[in-house]
Amino acid sequence: MSQIFVSRVEQIAGRVASLARPISSITAYDYPMGRLADEAGIDVILVGDSLGMMVAGMEDTTGVTLDQMVYHTEIVARAVKNAILIADLPINTYRTPSESVENGMRLIEAGADAVKIEGGLRQIEKIKAMVEADIPMVGHLGMLPQRVREEGGYKKKGKTDEESRILLESAHALTDAGVAMIVLESMATDIATLITKEISAPTIGIGSGPHCSGQIRVLHDVIGAYPWFVPPFAKVYTNVADQVSEALRQYKEELK
Ligand code: KIV
Image (cartoon, rainbow, N blue to C red; front, side, top):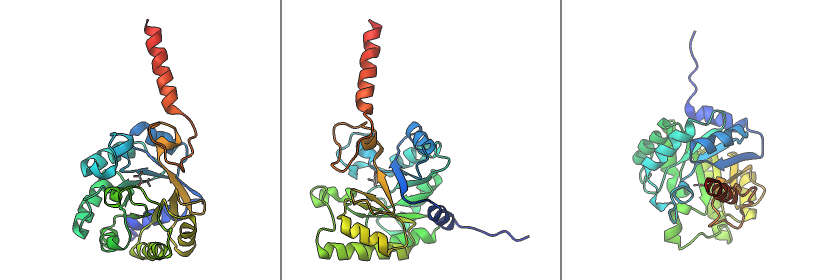
């Protein structure tokens, strides 16, 4: 009997298509948090390069390396049994199509189901090469944290007609290139809503209004584990930082 070969790209497309809307997504950077997120039924877990700030205390994501992403992807992958696991390629690791394929494959080998890169039209050739190499891809449009230094800060996108036009064109191009999903970060609600209506790939919003196909949040924002900076759109559901501080004070007190 002949066996039907289903590529990784097709498998992930099928899993994404079967997700109920709204799609829930969260970042995770280590085994316990990956396991808790998976066991809570989160649909999509991202090993984001935001680990540069949330885990390593860096100022932004521009110092994160591929080896660090591979390590964190491996340890989260060990925990995740049901969710779709995405990992970020960090800055300067996807400058050409061949570099993108080589480095993207390292994240797949580390256990990621799909790889995310930031940017629109200028990434199309790289995304096509990666999909061709059977690497399921996720796009990322709007505010691009890897460009924060070039842009002089984190700025909301899609506030002008011209910017909105380019975002919509980019979303179509990413979809045609074969991405399984697109993260829309810090984008005006109107353009995020229009992109979501027009393209077939699901959109996962963060700071882009309520009308995306799903939402993603940084874990530490949601659980209040990084009290030194909380983005304005973040809803904090519990206060882990205070709980840890209090537990450690009690522990010290009881030793006396
Ligand atoms: O690195 C990250 O955490 C991300 C999310 C903010 C989407 O890319």
